[in-house]
Image (cartoon, rainbow, N blue to C red; front, side):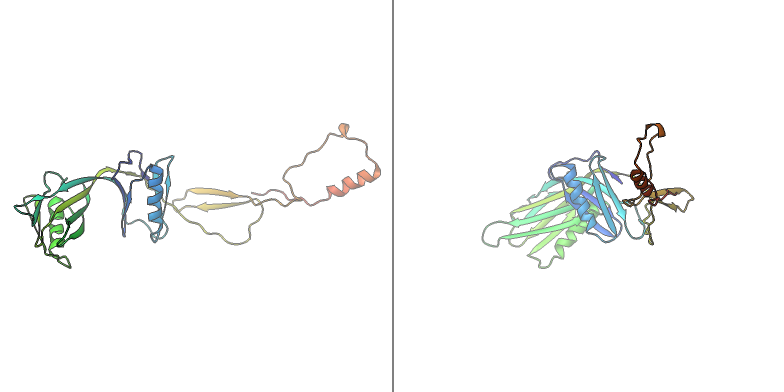
Length: 267
């Protein structure tokens, strides 16, 4: 159970859920927390071995592992975008992005770099996505390597030193924009253990099913089936002094009714 009480619906923000063995689930913030939570739960429900539901009244995302156990705690964060715009590095063939003054060294989540050359000749657009790794420098070096090994190369190259990412292109770059999704809030986690029980066999009326947990705690689960039309668990009698005199035929009908079968309630 992940508490989203402090989460917002700021434009451009994301709710990002990390689950063991599954790629991070990114949900762009919608108009309300309910819409955002429901959409994120739908992403989880599309993954094998997980189910989720969003409880808007409690402001909680509830995630259940349907097979196996959690090998690590789920993590839900809210991110806000921070934009870094490249400036010309001596000519229109290169752009410098000053990362160390704009971006956090610890709270990043995902960087998206968009490079463009608008208009003829040699119009161009390319996007690189890099997930945050350890710190700002490690992430920037990984992004640099992505650019230098891109296929096709589009004449691109990149360097990184002293907090500056410099991106160059043989046929010029008009704009270079990096958007970093940085963590601003983390949901508190409450963990409970759920057990799914499957029962089989004939279900009798007014049964009590009992499940005993491994730690010795006992939980009583009661389920009563619908009584048959001719059965009831209560009866009403009229004091003899208030009964009306009956004809012999009426008394016979009463005796006949009284012989209907009864089923007592058992526990």
